[in-house]
Length: 168
Image 1: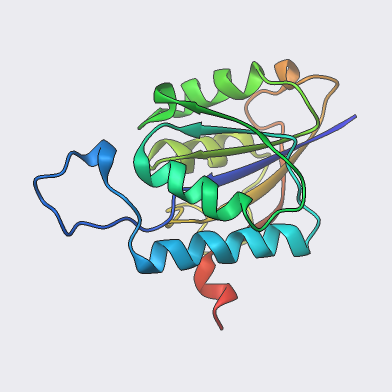
Image 2 (image 1 turned 135 degrees about the vertical axis):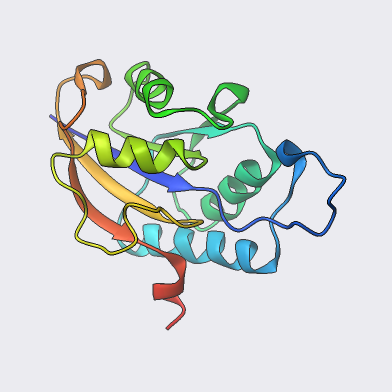
């Protein structure tokens, strides 16, 4: 059985208020446009998650809201503080505890880049895969019966996109 993981880094956030806690930073205009563009790209390519697990940080919640608004399927979403600046091991454990066929995970660097590199058998053939810029999204497929069965180097990176490629 195929399980599909849509792994997305939050979109570009604002640094306008230096007194604002990192957790509370919102998206800037470019970030809002990027999240919408990724949502449209996911929809046009048939990537419709059953569920989403999203860091509870403001910028990841906004990224999710704008991305999901472009999808046609209703998504069961959970916002969790545990994914705020989570490392690759915690992201793996979080994914392993999920159900459904297709899952959207939105969180932060450097954990998401490390996770993407470690979970795939070979990296996506894209120059930006290793630094995973804001709103970068990878589609990873696993041939497993359950999310619990995924492990390092078990996924296939089928697609990788950064928003700037959608703007051209």
